[in-house]
Image (cartoon, rainbow, N blue to C red; front, side):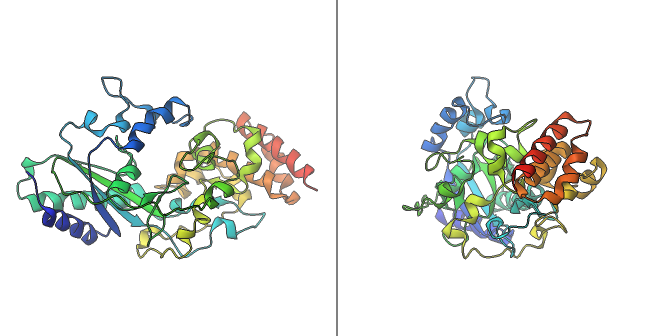
Length: 356
């Protein structure tokens, strides 16, 4: 089956009807970014994220070749939804009593669920358009599966890959959640989006831990998002000062991007923040109980950092705050039975005492 451009337009119209702000279609190809992925993994740039190293029976990285996983795959429908809310950027806030949770994790519902619900709705509409559901194969993903979504988003014309490695759309910016449908349908692909970063290096210059060593290359081992979410155990001391007040994720390289200066706010209520998650109180997070952590962050991406990880991150932020009124908190934490917490609390107290 080889549907024409009109059919592809119907698919994108259906994506809009499902609540997506942007959509496009890419063919399943051996794109240069996918060819680079094995080199990135081999260089150790993925840190401890072993799930990125998942391989097929032939020993090939699953995310590097979609057809090696799904031989029937012909096209990828890529959808994007804006999650930006009308709140200040992390670079505009400097309160020594408060930390920063990445904007994408503020929402009242886990974005995986809300976006996947729309993707599944679109998947059903796609099969309805074909008229014979058994004649096509599909798989839907939101941040899961053997798909590097942002690469396919580029070739679907949804946006370009910026120097900070994020997907950027000329009209919407980069505050985007992506969902994809891999299909056996041979749909008419869109043209790749043009790279509009130009000579700008704001994201590279602004990264406090120098995770962006050069344009379009990210070293996860130095990335604050990786350190606060994926990294288990202790965080190297030489990176702690650069983490600033970040306690879950990091928005700095997007905050400074010129394409986000006039980024529109979302009209989706489920992406509005939960109470207390915009600039959360550091003392609260440093001493949050496991029970309260489970309750407060139920159905939230923040759960991924785990209870000890959030406390660790909050204590590092306290150490960076320069606010000596936090010393009683770090003194209590230095007696914590968890050696991870006690070690970082001792570091935080020493750092506060040094910042006179």
